[in-house]
Length: 115
Image (cartoon, rainbow, N blue to C red; front, side, top):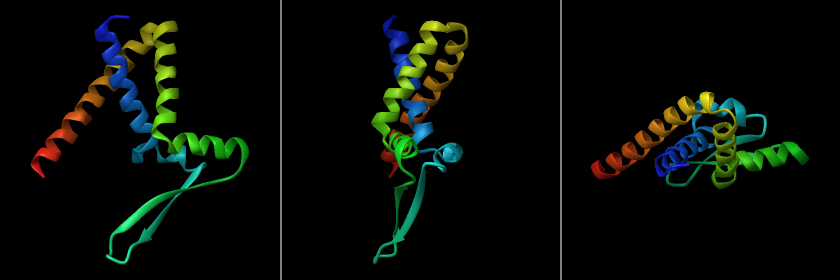
């Protein structure tokens, strides 16, 4: 694996992990395993937190999907194995996720600079 491929895989893993753990578009994946609870604080702001559902495997998957670091390991493993064993499918997927990951990092930097 070249340094370029390693960086692409890293950016793709970053974006796939964020997609699974935080993005609204994949909320349907997380919904069977945890519920988002909103609580209004005395100052009027709303704080969200996760309440895990079930026991056993269901709870374990809920914990996995609520942990950025845990999901990152599995997402990276999935992308790497796909890259090693089925390169024709993985290359476009990794490039797309890597570009989206880099765009997310740039957007975060620009937003912080402007605020």
